[in-house]
Image (cartoon, rainbow, N blue to C red; front, side):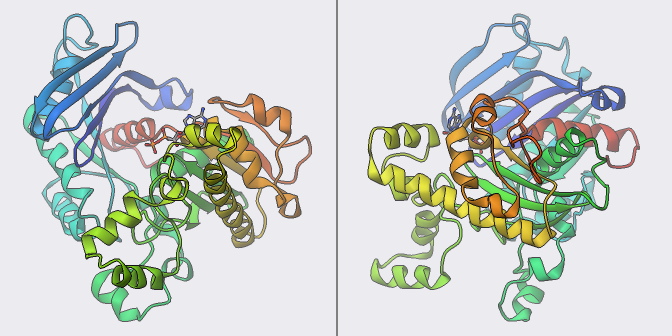
Amino acid sequence: MKVLVLNCGSSSVKFQLVETDEALAAAGKDHALAKGLVENIGGAAMLRYEAEGKRPVRETEEILEHKIAVERALGLLTRGDVGVLRDRGEIEAVGHRVVHGGERFKTSVRIDDEVLDGIEDCFELAPLHNPPNVKGYRAARDLLGAAPHVAVFDTSFHQTMPPEAFLYGLPYVLYQRHGIRRYGFHGTSHRFVSQRLAHLLGRTPDDPGLRLVTCHLGNGCSVAAIRGGRSQDTSMGFTPLEGLVMGTRSGDLDPAIVLHVMGKEELGVGEANALLNKHSGLLGLSGVSNDMRTLLAADAEGNERARAAVDVFCYRLRKYLAAYVGVLGGADAVAFAGGIGENAPAVRARSVRGLDAVGIAVDPKRNESARGTEGEISPEGASARVFVVPTNEELLIARDTYRIVAGLPPA
Ligand code: ADP
């Protein structure tokens, strides 16, 4: 089945056309036929696109709304010189990444009017993310006629967290009235990576005894503790701001700091929000960059603030790793995924330093050689095996979409 996967952000549309079905997925042979990105919607937008065996496309064009961006994506997929489809009618289903499903959506679902209402009810919880997701859905629905649409939520994998993991130490009434609790994000990535990790261990993902810790380290970063294929805890919370230090997000901090700094610097709510989400994390600490590559290079050249930023990043991750081994009562395996997790051996090594006590270590040679490829990096005979597992959220969105449209139970 040819599935269009759409990931619509506030000013961007990412898309992939994926060929998948049950047999292809079981053999790990399903894959993207084409992928692309429209950035900076609302102004001079940049289109990037590449398809198997075709020349890559880079174009700029004034694009003011998501619907035009989706139209352009469909145009590229069907364009004579670079397209992979003769006609957009060949798209059999559309899978949408939806950031927030609240407590209502515990699995991926086919989108109908009731589901759409449910996604819109979650706008309050994700005011920046869910509205563009819905814009993308409406655009694709208008442009693609009869194709079925499926929503795959970042939050749903973590809906198995028990109350002791998802409740904050706040008045319970705030949970009841406003849904203030930990939801967790990156669920599609943690699910994909944990399923792959189970496979690498020769176990089934829902083996009740299987204890996994997955680290998704990209621009946003999170860790998850997973038992028997079910998320027990994860580092992001009510929003994707909690937990690890990220490219531009602070991660965990004393909440009193926010009140204190708002007073001292005379910040409004919007400015405080920008401070924590856009000017903090690796960028804020280093004053150099939010990009781990740049920071590792600056660190190697002796830039002390770059070094401090990477140290804080790795130390925070180390604390979470040890904590999640505690949550699970031991770990069978740990996975590193995302741009940093897959490509930065130095970060992996610095993050597990001293964790031999909880059974986690990396073999220096294996760690160095695993760059962007799947592979084991722990020493022979380690109690917790450590792997690099490249994530692929779009592939899982396509697989879920296929299964739902084909009437199959979730994988
Ligand atoms: P997103 O979360 O936006 O999908 P990615 O998963 O692509 O982002 O991760 C982006 C991060 O990965 C950036 O910090 C980037 O510097 C880092 N990264 C990518 N390649 C490397 C590399 N070779 N070495 C170190 N960091 C890398």
